[in-house]
Image 1: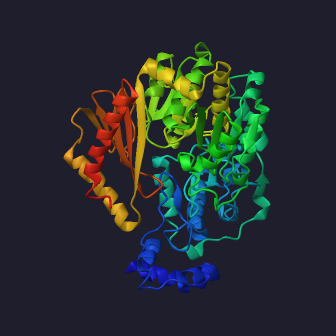
Image 2: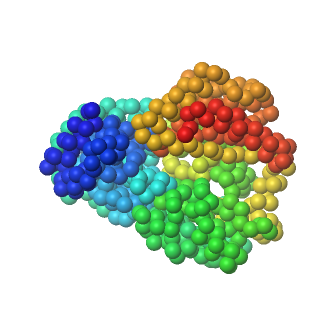
Image 3: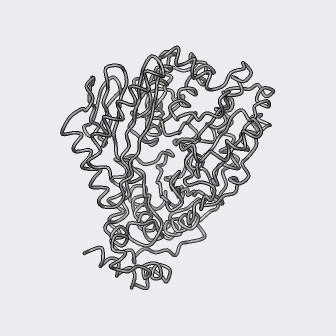
Length: 570
């Protein structure tokens, strides 16, 4: 019962403070044993998404001590790699979102790093995650930290680390950092004192907004002014920058959902602040229905994802991340002089629909597919830029656009993470141009389907919490590998646990716990555990001649997956 010993140690040790003692003392060892076990059965893992977990007392929770341990490890890593002088000169940029404790955790990180002699640029207010990525590049910092749990429910918070290129760490970098974090054996030896003289509060909003506006593709301000937009920041960081960018870009008719405009880590108006979920946009849709707005935008708490709904004759229709990505690919390439680039490139992930890729190839751009997670797209952008600096004529591509199915998009190289602020601007520019042609985003999407074939994409997520949930997820993946493809018309099975190299992915990908079934008709299904949540995810990308046939294929694929998971999912 090692977790019980840890529980008693945290509860009784004065070092952890009265709040921790009070919280842990509220549990009954017999009645609350499962809760105690979940809090202490392991250390909160620093993975490819950094730290992410429920806030509270315990080694498997987000609190100042688990944040402190990660930060102490990061400080040791930076001092070892760069040396004290460079750490004093270039430092670390730290940002945070509007969640409960985000500012406090950011201050904790600032205090620990400064106490180690490392300069800190601490954001003076809550900012979008892409602004933190931008800030690392703009300031020439050695690393970045952002405190956020993105679109997770209010109980969660997280901690992501960025490298000197403004890109979230990829696994090979995480593996090294974790070695340093693991050197911190005793929470009581973390110094939270800090040096105020080397903590500098900053605000890079003006520079970031200028960089975003530089990505504008459509300049007709008269037409932009006619587009009626309803926008909700879902109580997050997008409120100021999204409104500012839209206004400066010429969109004069923007209504904000007032009930959701105030920053609030409790997210009182939604069950979960996730713009992928249509329920999160219901207040925006209701407001749009009253005013007959053309389009609705919703950004998540750290404003790296944006969801969109469009007015049609049948009401407001949500677009999927794959659909928005394909539309943006089409729009950007239509408004880009492709001949001005030596090797124009689009980057997507392996669980993203092929529609955008087909559009890009036909319009003259190369397509790269990365593993799931925008960090891999950011890494690829950095590889392109390094290749140019090194006169590497094989890999010196020009990045135009990157996107993933989970509502994340990036145009330009001002950041290395998905950017809902810039994406909101481009979505509105696209919608404005279509409105001038008496069309909507849905109309344009249907035109693309006519030209490229019908694509129907969906995602099923199954939550499996606790130690038993982790074991079930491992068993599901093991069973799928052991018994082969459950689909009769399978052309190829790609197991990303094995480093993969093929023409489809343009080079070798590192290993990842993902299985992808490529079908004869151009459809595919992929299964993977989430890197940031206790979930197993199933991605479906069905290709057919029309929606009716796609519906039938989708229903059959879901039935097959359900039959394979029924023994594990309860």
